[in-house]
Figure 1 (cartoon, rainbow, N blue to C red):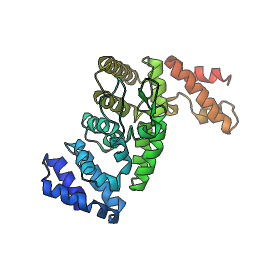
Figure 2: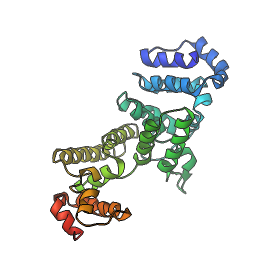
Figure 3: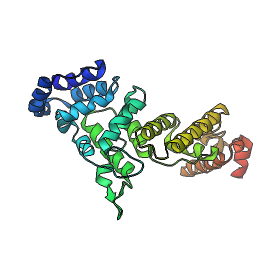
Figure 4: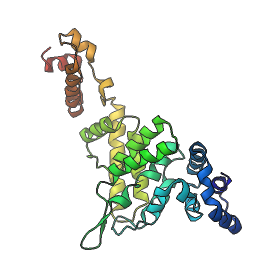
Length: 284
């Protein structure tokens, strides 16, 4: 475990690792197979939330990730030939890490956001690489890795969702943002915008200003929605299941379907979130 700690201390303190130490780690890295997943998890998180999370590169160069995170090694060898990118997949990942706060969920998300790219990479007739479906596959791989490293369920759930949605287009309208917040979760949407920012900043300069402007627009719209306290989920709806039953609806699964119908209406038209109006929609 001291091999991982050596890299972690470099990341926390900004040290350069002595060459003899590097060579020793390269030779002994396979011994990490004897270390429990829980202890590896602790060292990985401490490295990621350090001032130099991109020092994970040292873990790759010394063969540590080959033992504890082989999926990352595959990313370090995956080239990208695309106007939007200037790094291999792994280097892109490393460059995103400092662009988010030193938060476990955010740093883990950046580590895994493109983990599905190597397996989904295709090359068109012009030699341009594409990665359709990489976010969905990345979510699956992320869950596998986090479970293997014995992360708690809450961390797994939050990171997997951010990985799933990190590349999804969000319509730059109030309606589009409300629907995105409902889909992704009120707690995760602000984090998603930070993930998207870090992703853009570690790409090429191609269309960067346009991408950043779009993110600024989404942030502004979201802030305005929050300020107006608009309904974004069932808990904010002006009616609940008890109200529908009290108004005459029979208990059962129809209650949930009705509430979802009302929420869809309110996401489109926030002004409709009034008890009398919503009950009238259902003719109750």
